[in-house]
Structures are given as structure tokens and as C-alpha cells.
Image (cartoon, rainbow, N blue to C red; front, side, top):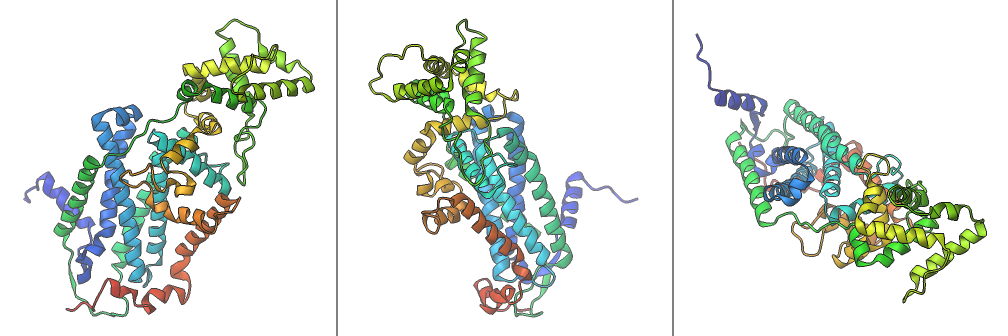
Length: 467
């Protein structure tokens, strides 16, 4: 009767059976561990992401352990993107998509794209100022590309669902499909070297050491360089610092002249009435707990010409410095003053968050903050604006250096799109075209042989492997 194996041995044997056993001799080199190291980094993201989702934002922002977990998650993201990018580069240089392996290349490119998207959605959810500013910049790109009707980067509930469920499931499917193809087709042979290579046993122990090194490196970097955190902007904080700015912004929402009310970026998904959302709804909520004349009813009963005059008088009043005496019998000023006080108490932002009853819709709050102009001023002081390569950095001097993988977009903004009024749309077109070419590369005759013709494989193999 066969003796049963201990659980640890069973797990080890099971993992070894899943791994590729026989490989070309060069496959034990570090460059051929990059796919495995990408999977290790992704596993770290799944573990830390699950913990963070279960514990919630308050934990990962305020708790010492939570802050470290957030930092670990950030550095695992950096590792995941780095290893996938290097893996694709090695496959390109060595023409690893040859011999029926075109689909593995396509799946790898999709993994890289989804990894970048996942990273960006993660930044939006982190809960600091960088999240607010990146959500606005990302929304502009999505709106410019025409998908803003479907994907609202300012809706925290939607972004959370995409980041926690949708993209991870897609990445898991892509990783499994990619590995299955590699397991069936084997590892690509060096270009022009025919069969001049030995087949050896895969060094799983060396692979495990490399994976363990990545885990330790991520853990160490998370400790030495924690995820930067700059408190997010709030309407109440701005109201406390500059109540006149809140009043001016409210007046613009009232007369539909704010950036949100006049938004133009190829498509405008912000089709809500700014007066209804930012003035009437919160004002009526305020009246429900305060006794007083309904000044909105007074305003709405006025003839159009008088309404226009009252709006103009309110605009001039809040723009004046020093402020003149309060205009008499101007319902616009009466309403805006009430809402400005409400903003300073924090109740105004709460009213906007609960405007649709969910509490997860942050579009109204984020757009109002954008209308004040404070996010752009803050980003400029931190060297984060588009003119300073935008989302490539989180804040001046921070480590890690933000989303360095978005540098091509920053380069476009500083060169061919520097004076383009439709920069978001055209950037989306350029990037989309590049992605399509990248996906189609193995299928384009002659072009797909360029790495081999140019001898790019020599950057990896200085000489043919010998038996």
C-alpha cells in the first residue's frame, strides 16, 4: 500500500507538474524568467489588493499597517509593469512570436495594456490629491477619445468595480491563456540559430529564488519609500480658506458659465444641469432644516430680463475686492450666501455626494472642485500639470516617480500636440493607432522580420548557444 505524502510535498509536486519541465538551455537565463516574475508581482497585487478592499480606505490611509500595505501594493504595481514591459521587449528582440506563437504575443500585449489601465484606476482609488487630479486628467482623455459616455473616471463606484473585479478577472484569464500556449508550443527558439541548442531541465529552484527576491525587494522598497500621500481637496477646506472663491464658483454654476456647464472635449458626458445639481437641490435640502423664504422661488418668478440682471449683479458683487455692500433684494446673492456657509460646514459636499442617493457618485464633487480652479493650482505647485508631463509624476520629488509609463503621452503633449486644441482626442487616436500596430505586428509581412533582419537578438544572445 502506497504511503501518503505530506501536504507540503503534495503542493510542491503539484506546482512542479504545472511548471514547464524541459526547456532550451537559454531558458534558464534571467531574461526568460520575466514572465514568471510578472506573475509573481500580479499575485502580490491580488493578495494586497484583496486585503485593502476588505479593510477599506480608512485603514489603508490612517493605519500604520494599512499604509505599508498600500505602499507594498504600489511597488508591486511598479514591478508588474516593469516585468511585463521587459518581457515584451525580449520577445520582440528575439522574434519570440515566430513559429505559431503570434497569439502569445497578442495576449501579452493585452496583458500589458490592461496592467496599465489597472494601475491608473488604482491611482484614482488611492484617496489622496493625486487621485483627484489624475481622475480629472484621465476623464479628459476618455472624453476626448469618445468613450466618456461609457467610462466615467470620476465615478468612484464604477472605477472600484473595474479595478477590483473586471480587470483582475481579465488579467487572470489572459495570464492562464498565455501560459497554456507557452506550455503547449514551448519557448521560442533564438532567431537564425536553427536547432543548435540543448534541451535541459528547467531550474525551478533558481526560478523560486528569483521570485523570492522580487517579493523581498518589493517589501523593502515599500518600507524605505512609502506611497506618497497628500490630503485630498475638500469643498469645506476651500470654503474655509477662500469663501469668496466658493461664492464665485456657485454663481458660475447658477448662470451656467462654469467649466462643467460649458465643458467641451470632443464629447461632453456632463450633461446634467449645473444649476439644478449645485444650486437648487442642495438649497432645497438646506431649507428643509432651516426656516426662511425660498429665494429660488422668488428668483424663478422673476421675468428673464430681471433674472439676467440679478445674475450679473451677483457676479460683479462676488468679483469685487473689496466687496461692496450686499445688493438689496437679490435672491441670487441670498441663495449663494446660504450655500457658501453650507459649504464651509461640510454639508454641501455631503449633499453633492448623496445627490443620486448612492454616496459613491463623486462626479459632482470632483467637477465642482475643478470649477474652483484649485486642483490645477495645486498640481502646478507640485509640478504635476500637463505642461509638466502631467500624470507621469505624482508630486515633485516623490519616489516612486508616479506613472512613468505615461511619459509617451507627456512627450506628445510637448511636441506634436503642444498647440492642438483637440489634444486629448488626437492623443487617443495616436495611442490607439500605435496599440493596433503593436497587436498586428507579428502578422505584418516583412515588418515582422525586422528584429531578425536587424540582428536585434544579438542584444540577448552574443553567440549561439552550444550543446
